[in-house]
Length: 118
Length: 113
Image (tube, rainbow over all chains, first blue to last red; front, side):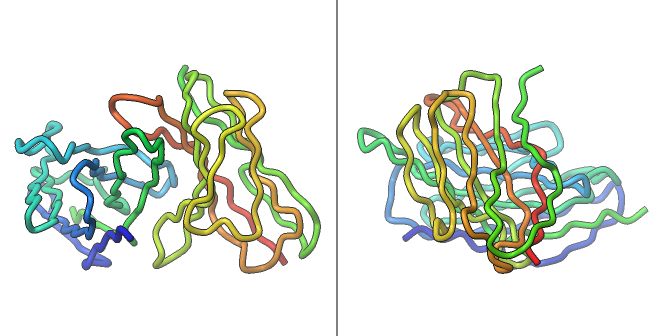
């Protein structure tokens, strides 16, 4: 069974600094997708970034980038130039590619609460 | 506006009183899913649906039912709620191909007394 581990329950970072959130996963699959979602105090789940496992190039979205290490099954999120609005819970998620089986399941980590300090 | 809606947003009920949480999306998405979020456990998938009349269990389906009679709607039914089902519930949807990115509803905070 697939598992997703976020080993940092809480982190803090000074405004304008850079922070990295870690995520590791366990799977025997070769085709899958990885996601980082942000959940601010409003509770809304917001997609931050997505990575396809077959792509070697790390995904980037503005100030957000990932370090995807497929062999190590690691998928960390780097937030550059942190802003107060980045304060939120961040969830790492794994989705197995259904292929012909038509099965799609998502596994989420337990989350990392990030606080950006002024 | 493309969105996933859930109702109600907040619900307090008592043990054993049947309830339904509705979920609707206006993006013509094939795939829909229900999750529950509990402190320290993250989000766990309850049920998902690949399309109309096609549903399957997630990791924590016990005590829940779903149906998918129309593409846009995917209600979550608790026929006999218990206090351990007190949680924050999210509905999500996505298109059946390409990005596999899910779009989440605003959440439903359920308390079972």
